Length: 592
Image (tube, rainbow, N blue to C red; front, top):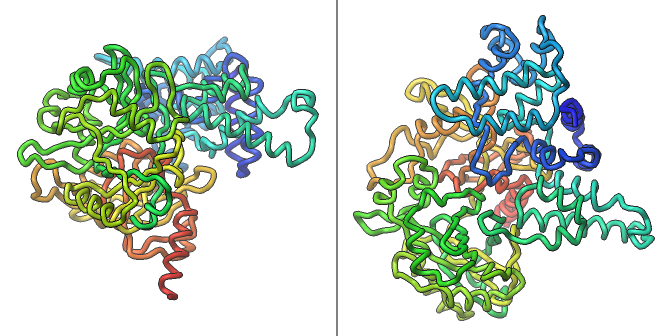
């Protein structure tokens, strides 16, 4: 496919607000994509690699000034001036390529494959002079592009397509393109509206199921096209590749959680990192719930797995804690995340922050998936293959009771051990990947209803905060995956680290925050910047108010940052619907 067809499709998507119409446009684009299907499905997400792939293009928005100058011949001052005015390097590239006096002679039309391959090559460039070679690969594409193509080459490169395509829309489009538009005889002559709705629901559910197990919409689109609904339903987990884990719903309290199920298990809710361990013979892989491959960051796990896991092939889940080696006490997740993010000095960090793994789940054992088996059977299988090493690699603290007094005692033990609370589980429930299900797991925590929100913008500080972001703009998600502003925050952030024991303070500093967010600047107007919504923070607040100042319709009163949530993807950002629900509950309490 010519890249211009893809760019035209993106431009149409950017102009259409309707979720249904977006799905229709994407479906048409996918149907005519041919051998480029996987690439197009990936590009529509503003990526050239699946979300779990460690590789990334790695070019920040600020670098586009130099790349556009190299591609178009326009001076840096001119590019900077235009960006300052319109705040989008994609639009700057479109405008300047249109004004370029000298075009590349006899250049062939750009193809999707050419753009895709060039951007993947950027991720592979390493060594001396790598930055210049990366820039040259992108500049080559822009120089050969037509104005509209240049806009979307720039936007894909920095991972900000701006076409309003959330994962749910892409899911629906795949179903529409390959599962719903079949001849009537293939639908058993079914034409009535109710049956067609059921067909659509089944098709979307099949696409989603495959994506939960194989989180790559490029691959899922190919399965849908080539093997249909049966192929999607028969999708399997793959050793060495992550899947979307089952998540817990929040319960109002311990009593309510116990009364939710006939057969109940209680486990500590650890303040650590959810990890998924894959084992195949002598090989192993470790993933986070965000699908990150962290095998290399935790080399000591190899010995633990070899000694303690007897199965030849398995996929097991647990919670990994970091410990302060001086005090022997567990560290908060924020400290453990230092190891998760670390690319260098890994052995040194392993000595500074030792780990403990607490296992609670198994979903695959020696060639067989266990998703459909009830939890009590999965727990037996997990115990049968684990030889615990106390304090290092062990089974999670676990009891089975519906007695409230016994449960409360266990709850207090969890809190006394510096953990977050309990997970209450239905022993009869199957494992449903990618879902929060009240019929499976309920979490009980002694905290107020906090919100996990994305940082979507910031304002440069003044005075003591000069050179740092002094305040942050928070965003929640709508039903289409768009981010809507819901508050400004400047408290809960420190000017410098506190005097807590090293590694145990969860203080978030302005300096840390600015260093983390600066590469994510998409546009800037004066002291205000718009940021790619990549960073999630847990936010406490005094009250939710209705507000016409923000697109969400709500504002948080006296919000404060509790901690970063690097364990969570921005796809898990709280929704405007949840804020609306909390607002309603809050008003009910006030009136009562």
